Structure formats: structure tokens, C-alpha cells
Amino acid sequence: MNGIAETKFQGPVLDAAEKALATGAACHILVWVPAGTENMVKNLLEKACCERTISLTGECRAADGYFRTVLRLHSAHCGLRNLNYATRTPQEREIIRTVESACRSGDYQEIGAVLGIYKDTGVRERFCEVLERRDYPAGDIAAGRRYTTAFVDLVALVISRCSGSRDQVPA
Image (cartoon, rainbow, N blue to C red; front, top):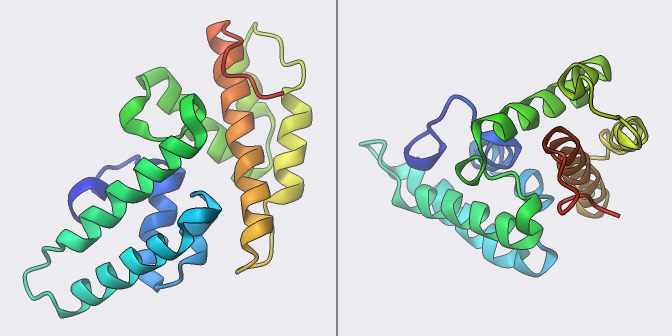
């Protein structure tokens, strides 16, 4: 990785963007950006893949542009609920990492530990919804978007419960 994607904890969006760049399979990142931007993202990915392949120095301006664009599109699409680490507080980044880990392992207790004394009303149900949607078929962008929407909603709910705010809570 180079440039913008060189952080230890980059978040699920940049992880997906890097996986798409490493494999050349756009399906990994398309689930995180709006449907109307698919062709643009595919073109940027293709350009970044080509530049990475022929670059002898490891520098890849196209990849940096690709990563920045993906984050911008995701952030614009999700608004305050975006998963861009650059726009998040350290506490929110930790919540995103914890929710991501819990969703990978299927262990709700990881989220329960973050919630602590805060009510988990609705959180467990959202967690179960994410688990139901997480194993979508590779290449099924619509199913992938249903998963990412459920995941973003879960993260927003946990953040709002921990902060006591209700403005980011999805309906």
C-alpha cells in the first residue's frame, strides 16, 4: 500500500478498496459506494491496477486518487454515518473496529462490552441483521450493499448509544 491507505487501522472502506486493488475485482469496493458511481470507481480501479503493475518505483498516483475518491464517495453517500477514519474521533474509530471485529467473529459480547452501561435496545437485533447479510455471494453487489448498509447502521447505532446522541441513529 502507499499514500492514503498506509495506516494500521484504515477501516472497512479502505480495507475493501485495498482488496479490490490487490485482486483487480471491483466487487469488493462497489458495495461501499453509491450505485451511480460504479463506472467511475471501476475506471479508477483499472487505472490504479495498471499503474501499479507497470510502476518500478512503487509510487502510484492513480491508487492515491482511487483511495481518496472511494472515501469521498462513501462519505458523501453515508453522510454523518460514514466510516472514514479521518472524520472520526478516536473513540468512534475504536467502536468501528470493535463492531467490525464482532461482526467477523459473530460474538455480540464484543459490542456489549463497548456499550457497557448504555442500553443495547435494538443493537442486538441490528447485529443479528448484519450477521444474516454478511455472507453474501461474491459479485452480488446488491446483496453486498444490503450488508454494508446494515453494518453502517449498526455502527451508527452503537456510536449514538455510547455518546448519548440520537442524531445519527438510523430508523
